[in-house]
Length: 345
Ligand SMILES: [Fe+2]
Image (cartoon, rainbow, N blue to C red; front, side, top):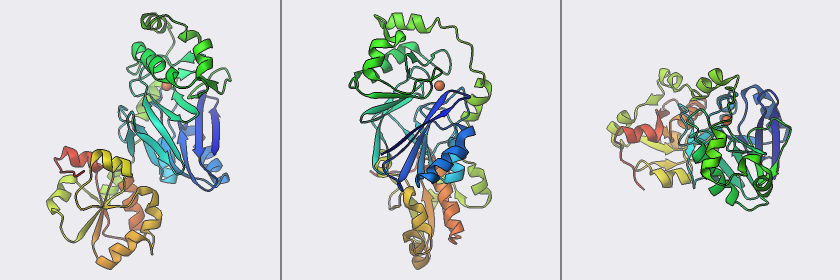
C-alpha cells in the first residue's frame, strides 16, 4: 500500500495520494492547484498512474487541482452528486464505492460544513474532508452549511466507526496530522456537547472571518469542467438528440466508457459496447481492441460516459490515433437522459 499525506502550507490543506502498489493506479484526494507539479512529480517518482482526482467538497479556501490534473494526466475528476461544480467526470453518492486498482473506498454523505461534503472510508482510515477535523469541526456558516446536519454526519456516521479508525482531515492549522475516532470522541472540544441543540448553538456563535481566498476560490472551483466546446468546434461532438436520430444505424458503434457500477446504477444505451476509460489508451492505439474494430468494420465510433468529460478525452485520443470518424456524445448519459433517451438495465 502506498499512502502519502501532502501539505499545502498556504491554505493548511492536506492532500492524500493512494495506490495499492508501485507501478499501479493512483488516486488523489483534495489536490491544491499550486501543488500540481509536485503531485505529478511524486506520481512519476513512485512509478504510479494517476487515474482519479477527488474533492471531498467544493473548497472555499484554495483552488482545486482537479482541472489541472485532468488536463495534464487525463485522469477522471470525481465529486459527490450534490456538488454545484459545473462538470466532473464522475459523481458519487452515499453507498457508492470510489475505486482504483486494488483500492475501494466507501462513499459517505456527510453534509454540514457544506451541503456537498462527502467522506471516504478505507478500512482502517477515513478521509473526513472538513466535516470532522482534529480537535475541531469544519465551520458551518457558509456554502449552505448546516450545524444540525453536521452533528448528524459526525455523531451518527463518523463516530459510529470503530474507535481505532484513523481520521485524516482536509485541513489542519496546528500541525496535527492524524487522529482516531476514539480520540476525537474523548478530546475534541466541539464534540463534548449534550445535545444537537447545544452543538448548533456552539457552531452558530463562532464568529469567524470569511476565508481570504473565498471570493476567488468558490467561483473558480465551480468551473472545473473540461472545455467540451473545443471538441465540438473540431466537429467531434454529437448531441444526444442527433445520436438518437441515428436510431442504431448499422455504421456506428456506441462505446460506453463508464465503470461497471455506473452502468448498473444508471443504465446503458442499448447495443453499446463496454470499454472502460481506464483501458482507453491501450484500446485506441494501433493494435488495440477499439482501433482494430474501427478499422476492420469501417464503422464510426461514438464514445459516451456520464457527463461527456471522459468521452471528450477519448475522442481526442482516438483522433490522435488516426480514427478520424470518432465522435462523442456531448454531456454524456446525463444529456441523453435529459433529451428523453431510453436506457436499458
Ligand atoms: Fe472546506
